[in-house]
Amino acid sequence: MSNKSLNEKLKQLYIKLINWLKYIKLKTDKSREIKGKYAHNHLLYNFNLNNDLHNKIKTFWKKYGIKVNTLWFRAWISVNGIEDYRYIPEEIFYTFIEPKSNRKDLFIAYVDKNN
Image 1 (cartoon, rainbow, N blue to C red):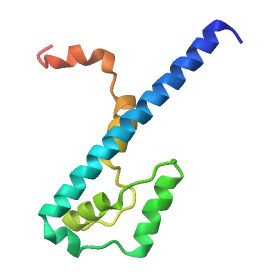
Image 2 (cartoon, rainbow, N blue to C red; image 1 turned 90 degrees about the vertical axis):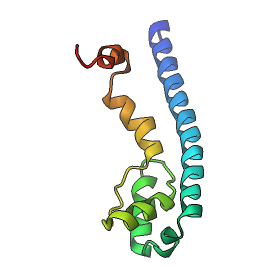
Image 3 (tube, rainbow, N blue to C red; image 1 turned 120 degrees about the vertical axis):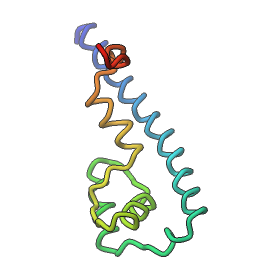
């Protein structure tokens, strides 16, 4: 294996590791956030996911290797009434999806919207 391909593989591994560390930090922060929301809003406790939906949520995210906190799903569904297992938790969105859809190297051009 050439040094160039080895360096590229190490770089990809480093980026993957950094993303997982960001994910773990965000997941911890978001877990604290949702627990705080439940602590200050007793109406959220009155809503429970049915077993079928709970299992769909766990199964859907398990195939991506991600264990999700269903408290967020309970909160979203209790607010909007739409029972969907495909909601994307914030820690997953901000760690994996948003970086792929926005080029961070171009952020300076977007800072001034007049350009």
